[in-house]
Length: 583
Image 1 (cartoon, rainbow, N blue to C red):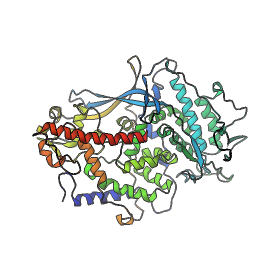
Image 2: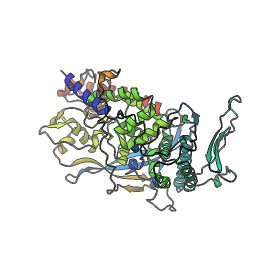
Image 3: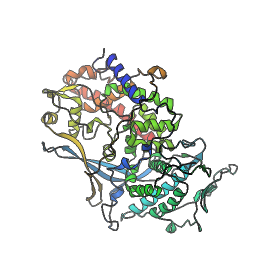
Image 4: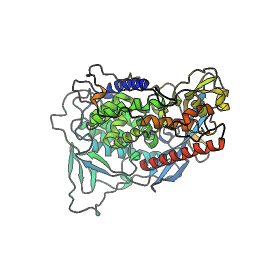
């Protein structure tokens, strides 16, 4: 039997079994097919509503503009340049005069540190698994070459778009490292990749892309993004590279995410002459043309580092799960992840089958080893929420954006109470709660804030994305309006009907642990009750999961506030420590 907070054993067991069945269905069937699902390379559906970087295409390219930027320094002393923007959200469907909410947000524009790339035989996808329906393509392994190529194209396009700003001078420079500080005894391996009559080589100076003619390091002679892509298209067509192009691009989008850390990529491995023959007939040039057309959208997504993290977290989110059942929902997921994680292809398949639209990002994150730290943080309850990224990609990350329920007379669902507190910008609730799972139970209306009581019986309240704006220094903005005609790809949840049924006993995992539920419950209730608990919720705030035994709001409001603030302060210290680690 449960208590005021903890679910009963029967309910926990029921959700645990249902969750295990759901997560197990995302494993491949027993037919031995080790190829990646086709949706893992479909980047297009991911950015269907993402605004183009710096308003590309919204304003004429020759029109001078001045973006509102700020220099910031992280806790680790790493400087960065951010650009100010804001998203606007509709809060009513016309049956109430509640105004829209404008949520300010900063996106990363530049960093002062550089990232290094090393080549290794131990890197993820050293043995490329292949993709379903693409026989005759992507033989060999060119992921590191393609990654560096996309890094150049993205950098060149970044300079071109930011170069419109009257406050910035942008250029792309090539610097060959002389390696003077490296031990002379360490012999740098040489890798040659055939490109018709041309060669791409990696020697002591690092990876060098050469074409016919002399290599110039003069920035004025470096090709622009479109020209560079045309050169690279010849390489990709020659080697019949299709899926690896998209995976490398997805990995390159994580460059702002790694923030100066070293990235390990697999050594290039050329295909045998007979490997790239026959198979599917698809247009590589069409794929690359589509990627270039969407490049500015990819760049916006990449510049939203917290948004990228939130997209990974959204794979594990279930809007039907209440905060005190998060452990029952997620424990089976991580039991399976532990069993498949040594096989990177199988891990990518599992995550992509769970959430196909984010599958390409997972593949890129596994390639660059970003996935390891992300999964570690999610496992410990450190999740991320970004409403803008959620709207841009058509993913659900929080109960806030799901449909409100119906009023229960003198009662209101706590999740609806939480929604109304946020969309009305009630004091202490100006920002969305960082905890995605909904609180359980009901609140008596006479115990809620006045704004909640005023809107509890309204019909049509919502949190619906409308626009994104790039803020300018003169107080104006460049607005990107939501395209009502574009819809996310319609994909049914993956289900395996042929795989042999597994049971909880097949895994060595503490399925009964409730640490994730405890953290999620404490977090969302601290957010919901940031100004204090009503007296009749005493069994909740005195529960061991919340540990506010000294709190008695109605009788001793001063002590109550101090207890709540103390608990919030402890949690804020823990979160700041986590944020400092991931920056």
